[in-house]
Image (cartoon, rainbow, N blue to C red; front, side, top):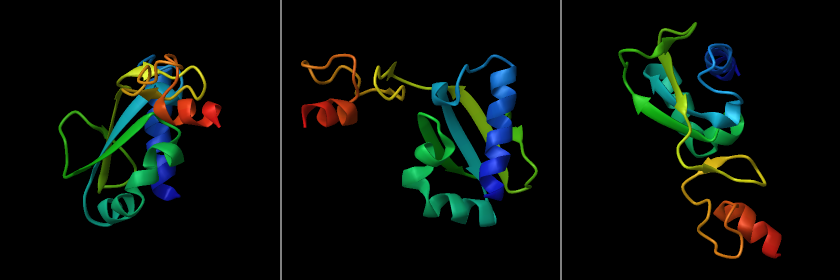
Length: 115
């Protein structure tokens, strides 16, 4: 929870600085070492959902230009999410438009509306 709140603070700063509008507009790169790296790696596949962002990437080691957090072992870079915005879930994805029947939806949402 501590790590999540540190990342959320950086996302809020990016939103206030008009880098992103909503957290789902974001891609976060989490530059981590030690304990933070171990924790983030253990939940890596669910990070985007947990952080309410479109994309989350864990990178081992420090990065110049990344935003510092309250933890020595974690820095965060926030950029605009890659891909197009799904009309249904609002998540940005390269898969939006892959289904000809539902060109404004991501793969997951297109499958959901077919059921």
